[in-house]
Amino acid sequence: MTITISLADALFAGAKEVFETMIFMSLEKCADDVVPANDCLLGTITFKGGLEGCVGICCSSACAKSVAANMLGMESESEMSESEIYDAIGEVTNMIMGSFKARIIESVGEVQVSIPSVIRGNNLDAVILEGQERVCVPVMLDEHVAVLSLLSKRKSPGQ
Image: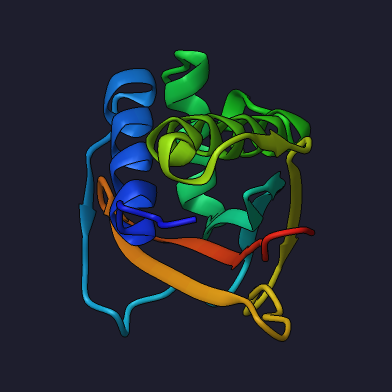
């Protein structure tokens, strides 16, 4: 199997499409050394098929509140419950995966997707396993810093 599209480009383009058309927030690449560290939410979703791995978005709690408010059409972030914020980040992760999948499916074939999960903590990062490749794309989401991530492993023929 030959992947003809850059996975980093597909991830960024998919996320940009989601944020700009469905959440009404701008998304731009930023410097590599800028990452959220404290009080973060990490939304992840796994997938398998011709390419296996995990797509994620990590952002500060303040960023997550802004995303949820925009998704829910709320003017005040204080009106939202913690579960609504978690649900919004999970749904954003799901939408990014769908948009990413649409961009890679021609190159990798069928991709099956899990349900998203969201956790909260400090210095959150996915663990890379043997044979996996890692793509991290630091972004500015309006005035907030976030990181898009992809852990992936190409399936060997016969697996």
